[in-house]
Image (cartoon, rainbow, N blue to C red; front, side, top):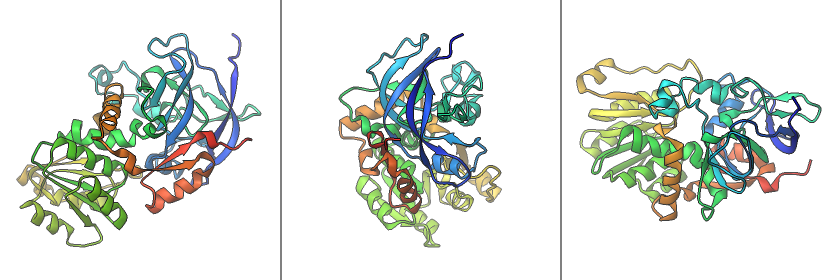
Length: 378
């Protein structure tokens, strides 16, 4: 069999735990089977990219990360039926498409989710990216590895969006934005007139605030330690904003709501915040968990507080979202002016990727978006 042709690309390579991203020349093979080659226009930077760089999860390195890509289809494999070159797409998470949970439409709980998104290679273990000398670089991160000028995706993970939508803005819909919004709409099913609390006002938490407002929650409380984030949360729909450095914030939530919230979303990944979030629930309240922590992290809380008050804790992956349906819905809501996630983003040239990462970790940028047309000539 002939070796497929390669495309010269520029990729941000993560070579070791905690090391800076390095922009390097690389080669990306052509699409096969149901793969789609996408010219990346922009890619969001997610908290998950940074915790993988820091090896919270044992993704093999060196690797090309990035999992909120948006771009234009350049070529398709012979098995692709729904996309053609020139289509605008947002890239989302990988799933097998045939396990029991995928068959039930719960694709974010795919039985092969870890391998599809964190395994460092394709379904057959074969990589797509190599250094110029042919040395493999781990890829297929969230079935895309979009910290690069070009990426390969599977057809079912490349979501077609309207050409008149602002493609540079849309990448974060593939993970962080759909996680926060989906957690509110699909997982927690926040109801009109209800009381909602988000623990952590990062990009996921802010997306949850936007969605809670759409869902008609009467009281929306944002909790964070960064004053600027709390101010923005009020601007986009939170009715109250509290600083978690105030030891009395749980009592403040109870006072504001008359006894606790009906729904809460934990997005910090900090076990002590989760435990306090349980205490901030009203009887029969539910706490959704989307914050990523190092593997093995334990959380403690009073079991009787759950049992006696009928409270629940619910794990949530990707906001229970089916990207093929939900991403176009979020795009349309944004175009109508009803989902202003553009207020959450800051644009950076691709070759400023490490500044974007530093600003994200410092809390001065909620959702960095890297613009690939600024890639250095290597």
